[in-house]
Length: 139
Image (cartoon, rainbow, N blue to C red; front, top):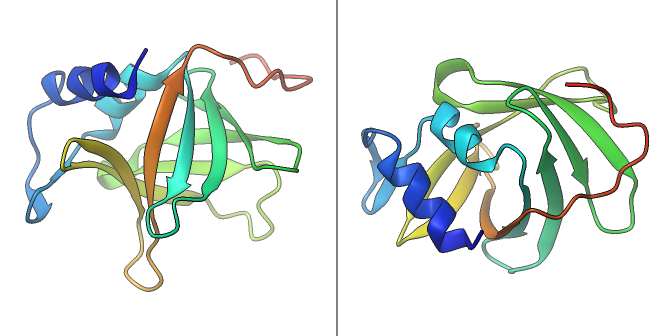
């Protein structure tokens, strides 16, 4: 599936949420998950364009994340307060990492759900490829 087709599916599958800033439309986390479950997506840092990592969405409650040069880390997914949150197996503080998914200029992005040192990442590809991570827990 191309990023464009997935993006249209997400936008068409959800009512448009209030605008975060001009030309940014929040996406309901459930609509985002409906579009990516069973898919693997790559995230790139918006400023540098560098690959941050790749995430395979095994179900709407379980994903596996892999950064370049590192192993696979499984995460439990929740959707509190319009956010998508991931509690990864290796979280040093035991706290989830939460994001707001949104569309900006026809590009699918996520913004770290905190106001200080917030990071924005762009989804550059969506595929049916597996990360082939060992010992995937049953979802």
